[in-house]
Length: 142
Ligand SMILES: [Cu+2]
Figure 1 (spheres, helix red, strand yellow):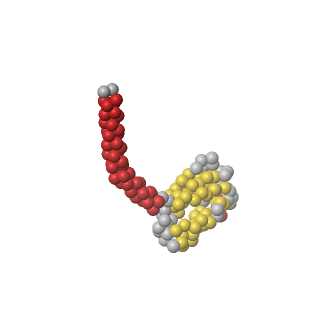
Figure 2 (cartoon, protein in one colour; figure 1 turned 120 degrees about the vertical axis):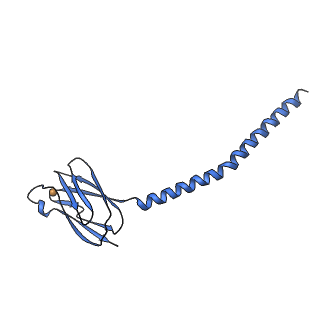
Figure 3 (cartoon, helix red, strand yellow; figure 1 turned 120 degrees about the horizontal axis):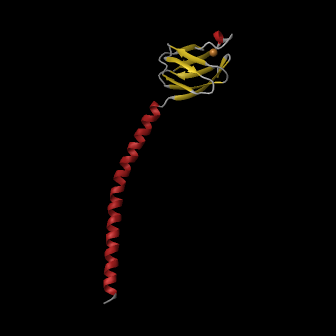
């Protein structure tokens, strides 16, 4: 008399637990797969649109690297820093707006080259006697 009710209670608890687990397990794959799918799609879109990042250092009277190679139609993000004074870059043909590079700060500019070719991007901020010869060569390839 004392054993049976306890057994029944345990059995009932087990049954409820199993049901809950089954329901949970039944629901999990559907929503899990949906989320995973959406996440994967999101990643794919992000990867397709994420600009390629290139770090460029400016200093009297060069850019480092002196030449960068980018792909036609591929967005590029330039991360620009100056080692000494204020410099800048700008190039209408490449679609680079005038971007000032302050010493001790990081400037970024994103552009998408539209046309193949080799572009000479001059420093856009007067920085001293060698300013006129300070340029970044941008090669746009397929
Ligand atoms: Cu300069």
